[in-house]
Image 1 (cartoon, rainbow, N blue to C red):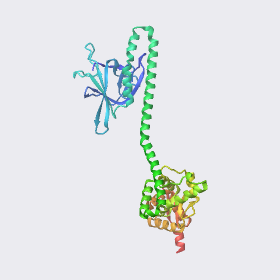
Image 2: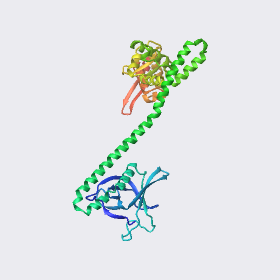
Image 3: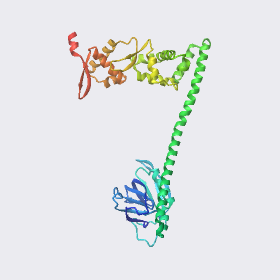
Image 4: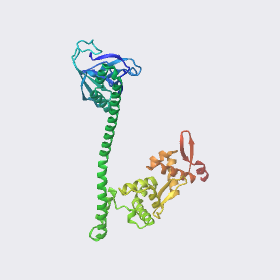
Length: 392
């Protein structure tokens, strides 16, 4: 197209940088061109296209004066690899017969070009292009060139327009961010409102079950409570329901014991305090516990679950009948069967956390049933053949 020309990528005195986009290619109408995978720089007066690094070094590149731009449009194209991506359609004024042929052949008679990015075009660049074309700063520059005494005021106008555009862009981005955050929390607010209502309803129904225990069968009571537990809102203990902190922690300890006795037995008789915290808070719904309240409640457990702290500092809840001798023997048998084992392998084998797997191995090691080999390949545990042979 003869609207394009080759020019040096150096800003003029009354020209300023606006935006930049990488990995761009040009279309001559609907036809592809050889101008692919380049950089596009938008100024207040021109649109520059060059290979990577050419514009930064001030080399000769393709240049399109924005005064030839009539209007801008967008289209969405489908790509098998990148999916749907946006293109910019730039409508240009009619050909000028007095101009020499430009870098693109005009034999097709097309009066528009397209800009396309490898992964589409960023919305910020599209917005900057629209604002720059609408501002038509080059017209002010052309008028000022006829009157040399007005060069300084033109620079003030140009700089003021650029600052206003940047401020407007930042405000619109902030507005879009606020809208996204508001939309994201709409459903969460609805969920919290419904959950509060469900908690209130569950408390009313639970009290009615207690008052009319004779009129409701035991199976119906158990089934209803199981439904509440699955929703995580089975009348959780709160500070408002207790007269003092000690009573609150004792009631909370009783509820934790009733809630976790079966899961701890199914987990092998031991559960880390981190897992306990997650399970309890998930079951309590919106009435979340702080780690400090949970620890204080666990310290008041007096059976059949108790709090235990290992020499390493790790804390777990375990059933009172839990025996270190049994754990050591079970761990020894697992190590002996595998011939050697790591913490990760034991955790995967027994379907327990890494913390509990490590404590099992350390307990068996303190009992003398296994020994460790700490090398550059990592920490592995082996059966203690010295003690085994000595016993035999």
